[in-house]
Image (cartoon, rainbow, N blue to C red; front, side):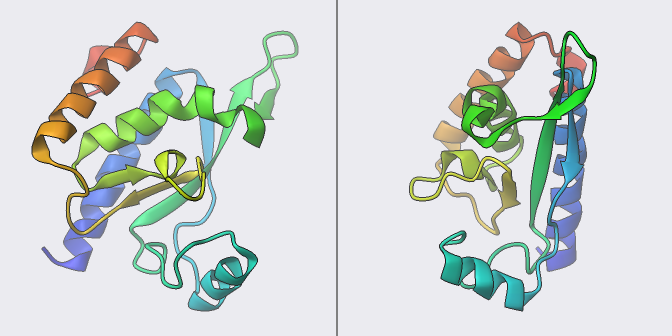
Amino acid sequence: MSLSDLQWQFFQHTASLIQVIKELGMKATGGELWRPPEMQQIYYKQGKSKVRTGRHQSRLAIDMNFFQQDEQTHKWKLIQFEHQKPILDPIGMYWESLDPKCRWGGNYRTLYDPYHFEMLRKPWRSEKQFYADQFDARAELITLGVRPEFIS
């Protein structure tokens, strides 16, 4: 599969992800999609990245910012980093259920990065594990009120 085919697939999955975020009553804004190599080196030296060349350079990753609406003021507020995991777990589960090549930074073993969504060139888990994860993610989203037609 060519890089442009992978990028197209990645963008289609990102569109599905944004729809689910909306269905969950949240908003997301784009952070980085493309990152210059010089910026990647800075992040690597600062310990904000574990790799010298990341998927942002090939436009197969995106960082997003997430917002929830305050129930009293109705203003949109950025979800603070320390509160992200329980709120974003269903979103990360959904991302990883879209394709065996989709991976969420909230599940990294060494660097917790809940803003990061990426697509690898090859699957990172077995087909059996992918289908089990897919079932769990979709069941979780339905219990959270996401309509089944949005979690295809």
